[in-house]
Length: 113
Length: 121
Image 1 (cartoon, rainbow over the protein chains, first blue to last red):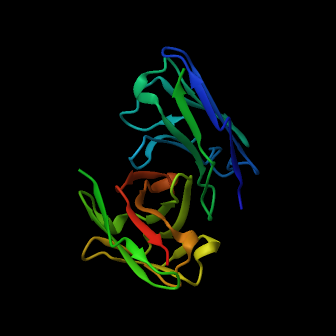
Image 2 (cartoon, each protein chain N blue to C red):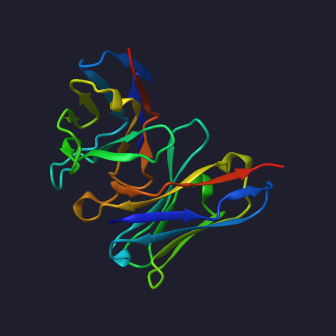
């Protein structure tokens, strides 16, 4: 099974600043078949279900603000939130979809400093 | 508008059973793989099970194999999760989630609001 590890577990960032969340996979998520990384990011606000932000490691879902961006390849990935807004307070999860079982990172809690 | 509405959660004793339902609308249900994902109170997300769109293939996380059964009724646009031999550690909000499909496969693009299952004596 793939083990997904996020860092940090929590972080506090000032409004308007940049937040960076890391996700590391125990095995490469880069497919030799299509040269794509099977990694996605979700945002979960309190009392709500998760919301899809990014898939293929860097493809933004429709409607997601462009201050959210994903990068990385193989085993190391990053979610970057530029110009942090108050509404970005949430827990962020990475997830691989390379094969079954699907697994998530443990989550990173983002707060305002 | 895509909507997923879970129901069937509640309080059950250890060893008991419960059947969850997820009513889907706003899309052609039979064309998508569907999943159950759970979240224990204050904890992270755990994928539980998938019913692939091909009509017969299913898969489970190891911790529920042999106890949980996923099924779907495409005529009723409904996904189910039969949970037997429930354990305290199965306590969680259970979300129904749609797979994006195509090459992206098991990216969850729509989620329901969830239904709470509490296993306690």
